[in-house]
Image (cartoon, rainbow, N blue to C red):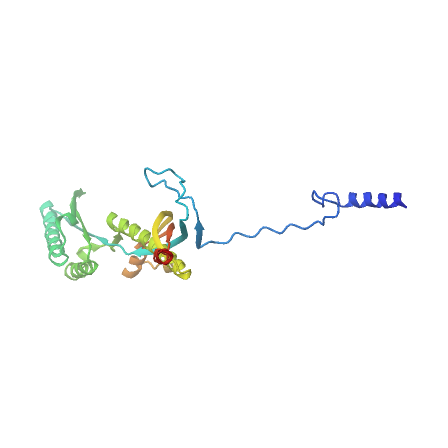
Length: 284
């Protein structure tokens, strides 16, 4: 009888080999729980953290903060856009005459008229107005060509000048559609503004987290820009294709630049010093 029980015990041990962890034979085998999927953390209260001091000269990287320091870790993001601040218009004119002087005179008169209108109506400065000329002879005909490039910062005055020239010079000139673009100063200003907006979003989030727990937000300990993106023209404003002659507003939308920024910030959580002082006074 004892031999049969021992034989059964051995047989059961063979069946459960690989399922039973190290321990007494009576311990039960438990299926391990599946790993939880990582959750996105928007704010975190972290005591005794290690701060990356790579941007703080004179301090060791990864130095521990003083004991008792409390922190709140937050992320912030922002997205801003900027319309172009410059527009360039190109005006072309030409003349074909049997005599060279006649071809030159025809183009020169219209050039003077165009530059005068640009300065008076568009307030164009000398450095915003470029004139190029080309004189050639084809068979027995002299050809004079000229091109005027005018840069505008006021788009209303740009339209006024273009409409005036079309009205006065008609088909004797060809005015190209405006080319909109951003100056380096405007693009850099957008990058700074979107970064500051993301930092402000993170600070507001940290402030609200502290208020939720009845705490006060302290100074920033770390601010790091983790992601910056820039693109031209908002995807929602793009149809399959613009018409052959897009409107002025469509051209402005296509030339508008967008920027987004995502930052990570660590703020100190202030202790309630008033209560501590009151408690010490009561003890004394």
